[in-house]
Amino acid sequence: MNVAAIKQLVDFYDMETLVKAEQDLLNETPLYIDVPGADDGEKLTHILAAIFCKREMEKDNLNINQALRLYSQRVRGSLD
Image 1 (cartoon, rainbow, N blue to C red):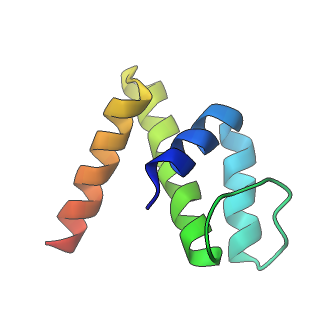
Image 2 (cartoon, rainbow, N blue to C red):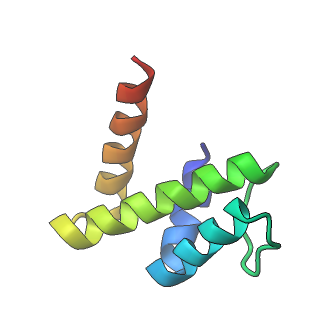
């Protein structure tokens, strides 16, 4: 997980574009947006994190750093 990549996606793309990119990756369709990552798995991680952050930012009026903190807590919780 690359925080800078997630922030870039949150800053540059709207929710509709990110969801479309997620679907494209899942359907093995070439991406039409630039998503940082070494492979499709890492790109999907960044897209999903950006979607999560955007939802939290809109829902709870959070800034990007607060949303990323929530996402990190969620990831750590799933690893326990």
